[in-house]
Image (cartoon, rainbow, N blue to C red):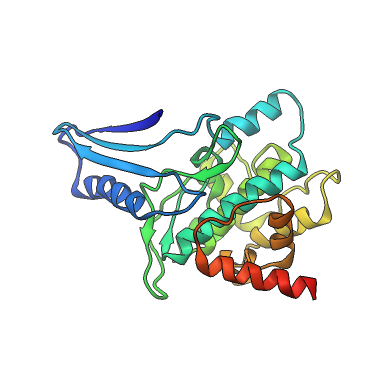
Length: 263
């Protein structure tokens, strides 16, 4: 079996926060039990390196997949977009259900297996969030930052939802929803401007989901637990035969929703 060894060099210049972040990733990965999150096997310290062993995803990452379609001038089919979106959503829902913010959801951190199934990886900057506490540390990748992060305001799991909305848009448009030649210009667009509508070749449902997740007002943005309970979401997951994993609570809700739909 081929596995991945993530080797992190310890130079001796790292501050306590950096070392804590490395240890945090290993501990978080060890706790994960979802079909849609990279599987952790082991971690060990060899003095000058911290080593984390995880599963190997043969087909690379979603960023490369999107860029391949852009290079070939070929749209990603809506069926594939929904498949990827549902799988990432279930992984993110699992994290949020365990009070964990990922804080760096982006296409480069979504990995594809040999069967082109999505798994969330790189939990190095994930943060455990208890009760209704809001995170304050400014962190993440600029293209995927939520308006509240750009304004340097406290944030919660809805910033991860915004980032997933950016990925959903990116899969349909083959570009970021907001772009600029400068970081300040990018922040301004994220806070003040609307994104360009995706092509009409895609369904109104896809456009609506993007609009929901990219609501600039976080109060209007749904949480992952609301998204995975949508009848449309559940119906699509059923049609695409997507395994909902080992989350018993989600299994119960989806089963009940299927019964409601049948009635």
